Length: 111
Image (cartoon, rainbow, N blue to C red; front, side, top):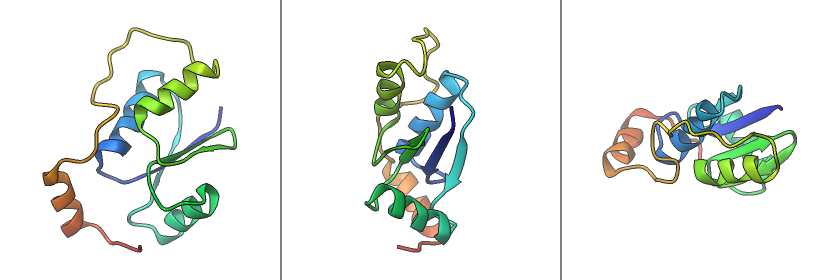
């Protein structure tokens, strides 16, 4: 399975996607859309919209999706088997006010 995840370096939604990838031991390409203009443009072009995270699994684009929704997609399409491993962080939560403030001062914005 080939997985490309268009993620912010620090974000509740993006971290939820990373958590699911680790829960199922799935190798994936973690693509930084905040600090690389080309990565963000590629995500928008492929997904048809500007919101993240977006996860492409074997050519299927899941746009503006949470980790919980990624897990549901993987399970419902028999791409992974259920496991009892607990998620190490929330899989369906946005950024805290503190995380938003940190991103506003430490990241380069292209959009």
